[in-house]
Amino acid sequence: MHPVNAIATEYPLATRIAGVREKTTVGLGGASIGVGITVIAGPCAVDSREDLCTTAELVRRSGAHALRGGAFKPRTSPYAFQGLGAEGLRYLAEAREQTGLPVVTEVMDTRDVAAVTEIADVLQIGARNMQNFAMLREVGRTALPVLLKRGLAATVNEFLLAAEYIMAEGNPNVILCERGIRSVDNGCRFTLDVGIIPVLKERSHLPVIADPSHAAGDVRRVIPLALAAVAVGADGIIVETHHDPVRSRCDSAQALPVSLLPDLMRGLQMIEQARSEAQPAHSPMVAAL
Ligand code: PEP
Ligand code: MN
Image 1 (cartoon, protein in one colour):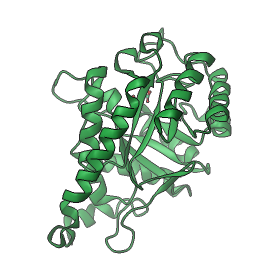
Image 2 (spheres, rainbow, N blue to C red):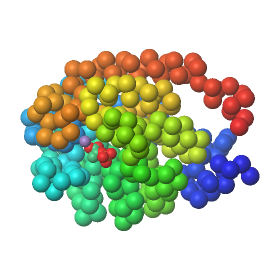
Image 3 (spheres, protein in one colour):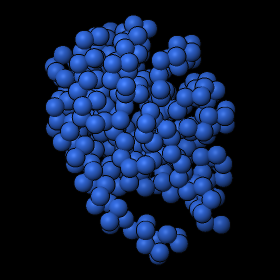
């Protein structure tokens, strides 16, 4: 047996089966993740009603497909801003109402799954919760798509087994997200593991997106990393953006000014175009492997 297939049997639902189950798509409002390039954009955290609604309107005008924003924030320090919680969820619902954009937001605690499910269009599982198995099972019992972030030091197998936990509960709509791992210091906050993107696509049929923001840690690196992720086959990105980054209460150094979002979107389209013209996977020789 090909070694890839030997590994893949550990996650029967997430595994890609050549010629049978090559690639699935996950619905997101009027768009589908896995068809073209999907852009999810918004602040790290819901800072305030006004800030969220201002950014959300500009995200909508940029042509992005969905709004991100955390009401519940996983913070390294217990003294840092932890998010607005239930109040933040209400502002997200308002922003969706105003813009029509579907909302992607994080759930951090199994006790909050019901409340977050009421307003979210996609549930985000953060990197630090990738192996919170109770949480994976809980979101697996909902009917919402789940954006699963790779853990800071998770192997490919651990990542796909985490997806399998969600799917095994009956929820097939999982989106994998590479967001940077711990590695030798490359000057970034985390190392965006672009290499895992084609590996995930070889092994799984699930859509794969990248988060350039948390890997970059600095706004100057966000666009290059986003372009790199799409160049290697990502189906889209989730990017932190803000109408006034210095006001951002969380991760302000990596917040892309929302005025630059249309440029990023154009760049991603150009890379996707180049990718589809040059993609070696379309050659009969590579497809046969
Ligand atoms: C986030 O998306 O704001 C976040 C906290 O991401 P991660 O879990 O990847 O650190
Ligand atoms: Mn963040």
